Image (cartoon, rainbow, N blue to C red; front, side, top):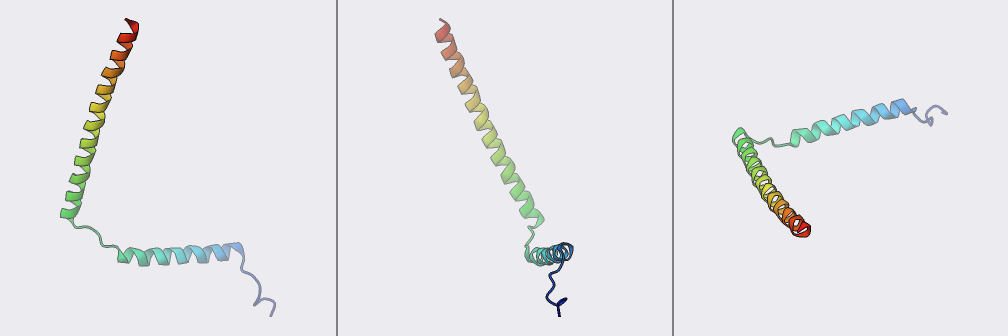
Length: 78
């Protein structure tokens, strides 16, 4: 009777939690709808285009800011 109420040790509880986590992960991964090859290519091209546009924007902003800072420094030096 005392053994029926005995709490499981740390390793048994951890093992049960880990196995439950893997079972739940496996069931969730079965629900995933993976993109097709054409969708993957399209999404990759969109991401690359966005990265290129943002990169060019940052480059132009950096160049203009550098010119403004150099102009201010030149005005202060005289």
